[in-house]
Length: 261
Image (cartoon, rainbow, N blue to C red; front, side, top):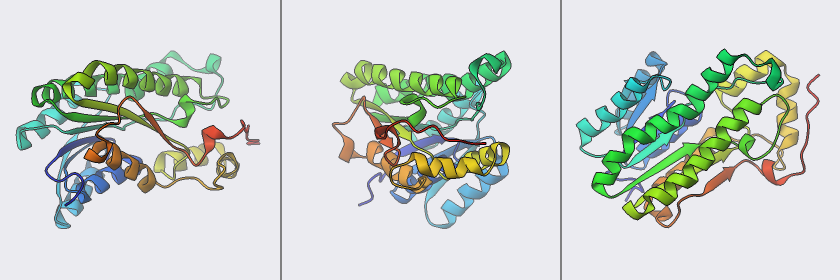
């Protein structure tokens, strides 16, 4: 039997990158996946591909910086399936590469809205359904940046560190209701978001990323997806309040500061 058979899963930022891989893996494992994203054409196409492969998938437009969109995504899943078993707060943006004193208020608030406030809102609207059914698994996407420092990424690291702190708190608070809350901290992953950073900062960034990881490479979205499937499944039934580092040893290594210029 598939590991997530009969479960309903909501994944934000699901049109590409890590979210895409998580949605694909969870659908393959039997979950009815609800894909949230702002890339409507890519999201609709992805849902159609999953359905053509015999999986259950729906796409719902969701700008995670808008509270109504998050509420609507979760409401759509519950209305169609009658339950909510898994929430993956994955959507994020990368704003950084500059000293914190050069960051604008607009950049700060935009990053916090997408990377942190969206996690609060996702949990806010998911938890009542999970409390009612006395079960659920919430997976919040953190980052290796929440564990170690890297020049120019104070705001991003602050948001991801807060995600981990919120995860631990909710695990304690809602554990008695059989709701598990965990986070995943990926290292550098081969995603479109990171491809954009390479184009903006330069090709040396890619070489630096490889050197930062003891395994000698960056990770693939599918490797993070397998961690998410585990945390969502009954195999992780006694796992809550943890941060699972899928980082190629990045946070275990001595700090390496890449020379980008």
